[in-house]
Image (cartoon, rainbow, N blue to C red; front, top):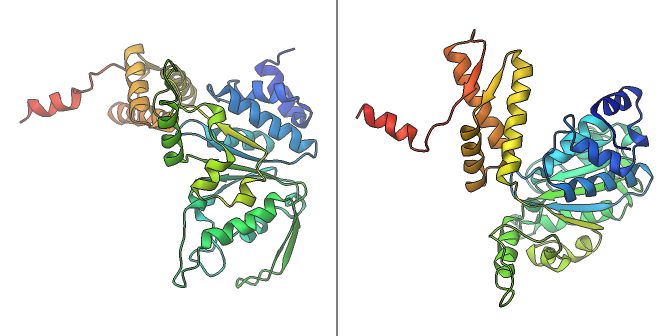
Length: 332
């Protein structure tokens, strides 16, 4: 039986989230509380990862998709409900190795996690494609390879040993047998190349627009060619390729944001349909995604509040794309 929003709230209050089935988790992600729009396949995959994790079947997964499609937002939503003790989101682009600039290492990640959760968490590595880019030091060492070596042991669910650090941290060992690893990345160059290839499959074949990649198109061989160590690529249990959000998805996201602002401001915030569609089309055309959609609406409402903080109703109306140019022309 499908759970209602009230059922979800009661489950959260009763602390019964760990008892949910994969379908329950997916439905929650798409509920008003989870807030994820579209991306059914990705939400289903995330639900299975979480369910298997709590059933003590940790995995290694990779989510690939364009900026703003919801990769990180899915895991932020899960982090909110399963707590930061269970789901840790790390900006992988800041990871470094001994002898390379920066101080955010695999060891510092685990030192920041509660000791009793270190070996049983879901570790989400955002911007993971940046890790695979070469990082050469003065001695011509590729530090990207060194980072991948440590990640390989993590994805093997091995025990990691870290020595004492310069900041007086003591030596540390972490049994990663119960750690699930989720890698997120845009992989823009890889997606563009695969999309071009799909458009030239053969005569009479339906073509896909640039950036629209079939889920089965990204392979382990593609990841190795991109720069991932073969041993690391071979440890990935699941590759999830996410589509760009559609205009309809972005319209719904915009409407949800206006509803959220209405509750936050305790007064109606409305967007006329033409304005909502225009914003969605801009976001889609420029590849800006859901974050831009929400930010743009928030900025427009802030401007209205600045002009009239006591207004009882805020309405975003349609303006043609050249409205700013027209206004500037009036004063030139």
